[in-house]
Every structure is written in structure tokens, then in C-alpha cells.
Image (cartoon, rainbow, N blue to C red; front, side, top):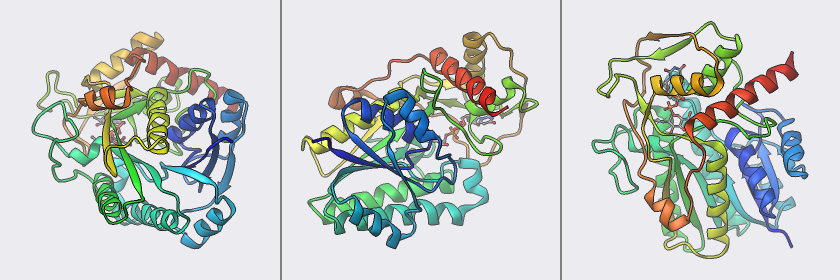
Length: 343
Ligand code: UD1
């Protein structure tokens, strides 16, 4: 019998890539998504790649009663991967209440329903944002948290605290928080990828939309940081590499291999890359020249952060394989593909 995995936010960017990898590994996937920032057709893209269309239930997990109805129907779920959340740093500064409500209510509801329906394994979409601006780089899982730089970051810190307390209080529930650095790129098939509604908040979709001619120019948020070239530094990893880590984490939960009831892993490449280097990588990989202009800093931005991924490397047996240039090329192919279809 195939094990059924619930993927919340499964039509979203990372969720859809994870659904593909789960299906490839023999899991049955059911998705909950409220389609706030994604399209139902993503399930067709997943089918084109994997041969299986995951079941999609359109609902908002901030609505506990609807979530309970869902679990009554799907009582055979073996584990949950929780992606559904708002995720834009800049937007969270402008709309803090929406971020606290959506990101925390959904997690609380999900954990409550999991307890009620006796589902014991959760993989949580966390972020390097929990570290704030760390004093020492790269960051490992023991690096102390600094104050969150944005409401978004704070929702991830509080989310992890909720998980720590819940797993401490209920010995049946096991959770793994995966702290992503900056996921970029798209599935090599070009059939799924990142598709933000409206103006992109993240760097790589802004780059690809600018290159495609949908935006006039990329605004680079500052080049006066305390970094080697003055630009912000991040750790960009390919979304397919990231998706595969979720499959490893789910198997770890299902096979009872966790070493404590709450585990955390950094998921990154281990290399810091500046915004300027990211632009240069895009240009090198695609042969397309990008129009950009340096403007002021963005509120809530961390100056520099990159991962020490050695715990994930050794304990999960996971590491990134795609290069930055490969990631940029897949992002570009996806942009061309989706715009071709939409025009
Ligand atoms: C943040 C989180 C990350 C999370 C992501 C979700 C931190 C340190 N990182 O990523 O963990 O997965 O949100 O959205 O909190 N930039 C520009 N121009 C643009 C857009 C971005 O210059 O138009 C720059 C930013 O200033 C930043 C870099 O590009 O230096 C990456 O930005 P972005 O893609 O938005 O991701 P983060 O904010 O780093």
C-alpha cells in the first residue's frame, strides 16, 4: 500500500516540486491549497512530469472546521508536509497582521487536527530567516537566533517555538523543521516553477521577468552592505534539490529514525553569493543581458547569510547537486515556457 502524504501549499513553488519527488518515490500525494498564490493547473504540471495527478482539495487551513472535514475524509494520511504560508519579507513588513494570522493560525490548526486524527509526523517549512542577522557565518543549527528582521521571519521563529512546545508536550508527535536558505530555479522539464502573482518580491523571478521584458529593470536593494562587493549575500539552492530533502525527511519520520521528537536541519549549498554574482550567473547561464539599477535598501533585509549544511549532509545524507548557473538556466526556461503559454 502506498503511504499517503498531505502536502499543504502543494500547488505552490516548493510544494509542487516536492509533490513530484514524493510521487517518484512511490508516495500517494494529497494537496491542500487555498490557491492564494498559486493555480489549480499546477496539479496538471505535476501529472505531466510524474504521470500521476495528485488530489487537490481547495481549502484554507485557517478554517479549522473545514480542515477537520478534510481529515475525516482522508483518515489514512501517514505524514504531513506543511508549506502553506505567506513568504515575502517585504510584504510582511507592510502587512504584519495578515502574516501573523495566516502563518500561525494555519500551523496551530494543523497541529490540532493532527492530534485529533492521530497523525504523528510533520515536516515544517522553516527558513534561515529564523537566525535573523547572525554574528558568525556560516550558520549551523546551533547558531543562536537573533531578533527576526521582519514579521515573516518572526512567524517562522514563533512557528518553530510552537513545534518545540507541541512535540515536548505530546510524545507521539514528531516534527522536522527544514530551514531553507534561498530556493531558486525550476523543474528541468519546464512544466512547473515559481509563478508569483503580480510583481515578484523575490530576486530570481524578478530577474527572469525583467529579462523576458515584463519589467523595465531589476531594482537591486543596496550595494553599500558590509560584504566583499557591497551587495547582500545569500545561499541560493535549486528547488529540486530542496524538494528531495523533504522526501528524505518524510521517510525519516515514517521509519522512526528521528533522534529526538523535534529536529532541525539547514538546507543550503554552503556558499554565499552576492546579488551581483547572482545577476552575473543569470547572464552567464542564459546569454541574456539584464537591465538593473541599484536603489535603496529594502526594509527587513538581512545583510548576509549562508548555510553550514553539514548536519543535513551527514545525518540526512542529503546535499545540493545543482550549480547556481544550472538553477538560473532552469528558472529562465520556465519563465519562457510559461509566458509562451500565457500569451
Ligand atoms: C527571504 C528569507 C528566505 C525565505 C524567503 C522567502 C532571509 C534572510 N531570507 O529571502 O529564507 O526563503 O525570504 O521569500 O530572511 N533583491 C533585490 N531586488 C529584488 C528582489 C530581491 O535586490 O527585486 C535582493 C534582496 O535584497 C536580497 C536578495 O535579492 O538581498 C534575495 O531576496 P529574496 O529573493 O526576496 O529573498 P530573501 O529576502 O533573501
